[in-house]
Every structure is written in C-alpha cells, then in structure tokens.
Length: 365
Image 1 (cartoon, rainbow, N blue to C red):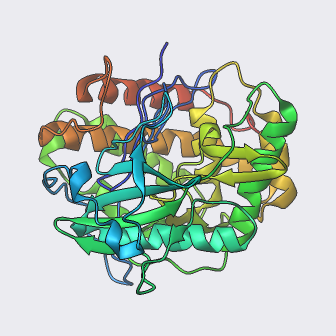
Image 2 (cartoon, rainbow, N blue to C red; image 1 turned 180 degrees about the horizontal axis):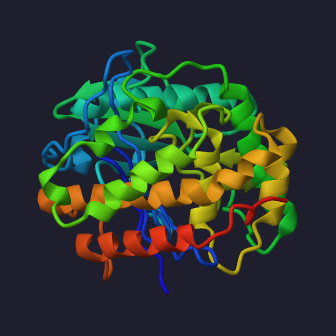
C-alpha cells in the first residue's frame, strides 16, 4: 500500500508526497520535496494565553515570477536562479522557493503569503537557535536592515542558507542513529524556548474539535482526535519542535548532520516530532537505531515511546481534518500524482486504524 501524501495545516511551506505507514501504522504529515511521504502539518495561530481560533485557508496570491524576486533586500542582485536537483520540490502547499547561486555561494529564497509572515519569521528564528546549538539548519541570512524576513508585494520573503550534503542513508544504522541524536539535540536546545509568535501550541488546539461543515459525514476524524487527546498525558516532555523531521530532511555533510525546512515549528510534545519521523520512514527501514540515538541526547524519557502509537493516530486524524478542509475550499495546490483530497482523506482513515492496531509497547526499546 502506498502512503498517502503529506499535508499541512494552512501554512506557508512546501509539502511532500505520501509514503506508506510503518508496519501496521505509519504515515501522517509532511511537505513535498522528495517522493512518497505524508504529512499532517500544523497551522499558525497567534500565541496568546486566551483561546486560539481555528486556522483559515486564505486565497493564495498570484505566484511570483523570477523577475519579481526582491533580492535587493539582501544585496543579492548578482544571484542567479539555478535549477533544483532532481526530485526536489520548489512549490509547496503555500510557498515557493528558488535555488540561487553566485560565485560558488548557494542560498535558497522562499516566499510565503504575507499573511503568514510572522509565523514564517518564527520558524526561521527557531532555525537560527538550532544553528547556534551546533545543528546546521538552513538558517536565515538577515536583510541589509537586520530583519529575518522582508515583505514585498503580496509575499513575505526569506533568504536561507543552502545546506550541502545528502539525505540520510536509511540502510546505514549509524546514520539513522546520528539523525536521532541530531533531533534529540535540537529538542534539548529548544526545550526552554517559549512559544514563538503565531506558531501553533499543542495545548491550544481545541479548534480541531469544533463543529465544521467540511466534516459532515466524517465523524471519525474528530472522534480519533478526541480519543488521542484523552490518551496523551499532560506531562510529556515538550518545547519548540520542528514538526517535519523526515529522514529525507536531514543532511549529512562530512561529520556534520543538519536538518532542513523549519517552516512548521510549533510548541508541543517532543514525541510529535519522533512520530513524524516514524511516519515518513518506509516500511522496510529499521528505525530502532534512530530511536536509540534520539534518547542519547533528548530530554524525553524512554517511557514516552509508549505514546507513539497514539501520536501517530493523532497525526493521521489531523491530516484527515486538513484534507477535508482543503476539499471544502477546492484547494489542491501542491498535490501531485494520483492523490486527491478524497484519496488522502481515505488514507487518513486507514492510518488511524493502523495506529489503533499497534500495541502500546510497539516502539519501546
């Protein structure tokens, strides 16, 4: 069975296509850049102590052309747009990216709708913090005025460091362990950082349970979300998390291990990130080295792995919620291949059932 394709809550970052769940239950959410993966992505809501409303799908502005790139904010007029390598996605569900080059220097220019600009900047600040902790993260290059992002036209723009290297060799247990250690180090370094502006906060996601016209006939989605919240304890280790740490997003360059694409950061349980990695892993990958390496550097306890099946179920259910809303508003930007909102909603149902079938100790080491 092929995995459903990744999805994202209405946010400004590239998603990727689907991949099958691991064993009986895998697959949840991602953005596009490689081949079959799935994702259930978070949305951006202002961080306030009061109630946070449900995210809204705003119409996307017309796509910017190459001639519209505002490189003058970075004194980057001499950059040239070059083709992305094969199997790389430059268009996401709510964003566009360009690979730039000049005199051997490479950078990535990303544009998101202006309405998502604050959230975009928050993700880039998280990447900066991870970079300072020693994890190459595609951090932003500041504008001439020292800003993280720049607004121009209908879009908000960021110029990011290009990470050299290659994705994780999933046949290599040592690299899987190093990827786990890198994610654990990120969680440890960002654990005390408070929620960033306009990023999603796990404890403030009650909007997922509000009645919605696009969920008519799909009661199983909110039922699974309700069951998931009820089954997860309040004392899971948490902090700023990446929210999309697929093995394909790690970059190995010599003795350095980096992590790309910080567009979906939120404040939430560290196990959500771990579940994300598991959900993107192909069925034949033995993720034990990754899970072992993660615990070597992470603030999470080994016992928290008992909640990974529930977290996988939650991700699948939220993915169903997102695709149902996209279908309601006739949104299909970023979707490719044979997958449609209808097929992805059905895939979410299958993944919920698969997660329910996993014993609680399935991932315990």
